[in-house]
Image (cartoon, rainbow, N blue to C red; front, side, top):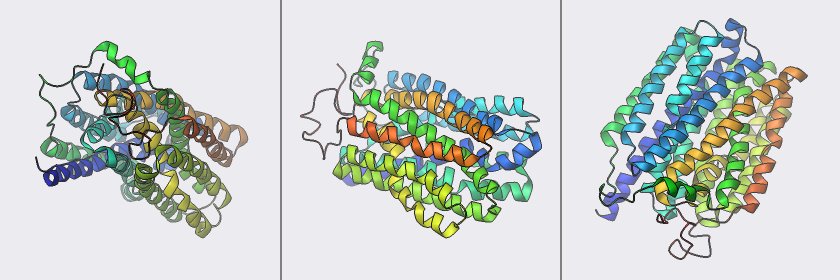
Length: 418
């Protein structure tokens, strides 16, 4: 295959996965933008609203690890697993419209998490395997940009607009439809042209020990936990905080959309810069910027122009999730185990950070009668991520002292199984 043809197919795959990942996060987190309406109708406290996010995170974590291990055992052939995940969670999201009470909604949210769990690590695994090392950070950042642009920047307008026009219950089956459409795109256009079954490296049970063989993986597990916990917690309560501070629905939507757009752009810019300057300095800068975002929301909530200007730090903050959860661990293990490495990050990050982040924030808000304190907590947490950035081993082929061929066998995503 010519280099031009290969690049075209790579770009097509990245574009499709951009939309697929975006739909995953729209269906997962879109509910948070309707929490004021859902909470009022079902009489839910902040803690119970937080649990609707937490239960999804736990189910997501368990499912992602199980199916990613299966994927790596199958040699990374994941097309139909991705399609099945998209179809099943979209159907589960549509059923939210029928939830009569908190208990039913909690069960449906757990089902959504279990069906969505495999999608993102398998999507990132497919993109990482198809990407050349010098553009891997950028390509994986584009996928995360989809989660932020569609699942964060556009989600407020989509969810609040549908809920305002048709009621919050009808919003869920309508946002489930794009998931089915993207599943069709993946089924039609995704190609898996890797080695034949006879030539593909065989992943054995004992090979999975290599996922934890590099010090970067335990360090990024800690970083992912903090990053995911603070991001999910902030995303859960930021809409309600703006509402409590007296911002109109239209103004709050504008702020959240602007925030999502900046973070989405940053998720591409920061990893792309890391392809040149290295993963460590880029991750450190992203960690510091991530801590500033919630602080600026609290400081400037009553001055929308200042708040919008301050969100420029999102151009740096947006790269934190991509770098610590995908790029660094993916370049620290053999490429045949990338999906498992990603899923392990998600499993630990979602189970600990994703589950505890919203719960702790909700408890702090209920105890102090102030959502601002919860947001400030999420602003302090990324300091741990900054320390992780200083301790990891550099993995960027361009920034490192050695090329992947010169590196130790377990030091690059290009390494082979033992």
